[in-house]
Length: 201
Image 1 (cartoon, helix red, strand yellow):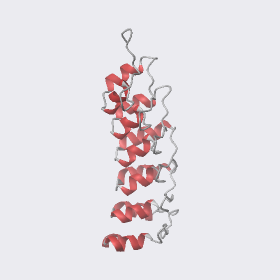
Image 2 (cartoon, rainbow, N blue to C red):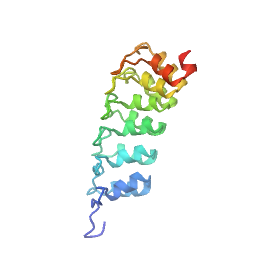
Image 3 (cartoon, rainbow, N blue to C red):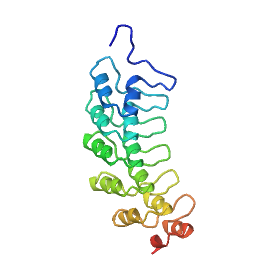
Image 4 (cartoon, helix red, strand yellow):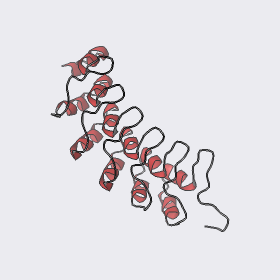
């Protein structure tokens, strides 16, 4: 770096140069920054997100791979609303990134965001069948957690009408098939309300 240049300077969003490089998936630039010991690879922006969080959110596998292999990077860092990189990737169906984060061995499968939803719940409610299969196959995720509304992943996915994902949860022995949420509503009632006939059957 040139004399007088601060590689950790921030803009109004508290983004540093490596934050922007990670956000947009510029792998070569991220590698360049990581080679400089003065660069903070785990800087939090105004939302509490790190370069790893933003690269995971956007599905940049190459950047994620570089960051989780770097000293000083927390693979499980939560932002201001409790979102960890794994949760961001799972919600947005970035299966490759999910695999990398799980393989790091440094993620908490029970980590929940401000709504009480963990990575499995977020993948399920958005109908991401492959990601749900991947998470369930690890055996590390509770398939029946309750969120802030006391709804389970099964309840969420029934409400959104994703039949294939409903079948995955119904096949799990640990899953309560008739959980009651804070409003007294069960998955069967949700399916009735939303007229998802295939799920009702």
